[in-house]
Length: 125
Image (tube, rainbow, N blue to C red; front, side):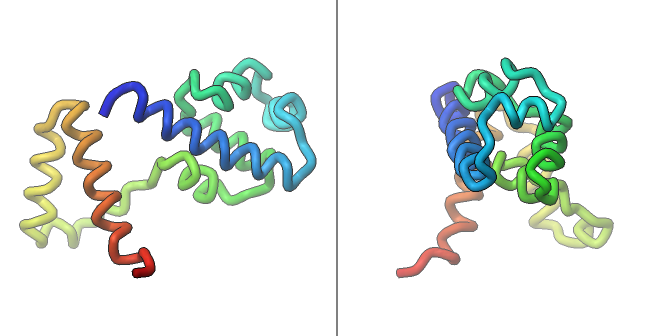
């Protein structure tokens, strides 16, 4: 996955954020003020020129009065759900090892494939 794909992910988050702003009748400048962020930061996020960090997402969540998980999910950032019981699953342990050993480009491909396959069961046929 290249830079173009990363930009697509950011654009998707910016589309989501634009909808949330419209619902609340806020503009980007107002969001920046309420969230305590620079207007340039919001502008770069909206244009897909900036990767969104966790602290920024938390500030956006607080400003929009949304649970942080909602904003993280919109940005395609998820909390790890790994537990000690997972160590008993050899397939999961193998997946984690393969992922850790992969290059950043390979990891992106693996994640995209995992998303594709996990969404197959939820789509209507």
